[in-house]
Image (tube, rainbow, N blue to C red; front, side, top):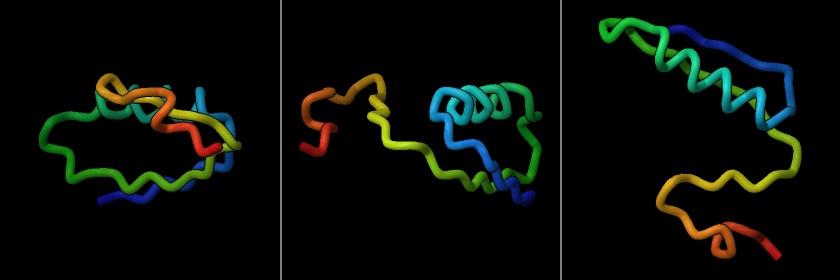
Length: 56
């Protein structure tokens, strides 16, 4: 397993990089441990309800 620490706090960049790496790495890759911190943001997945994810 490889470790990758990102200094970016831009959620769009961090998510795009994660997606790119998951598509680019071969299936037999031992894996990546990605570590980053996003600026305050709301990240909503396909089956999530936006209002349920907002901490108000």
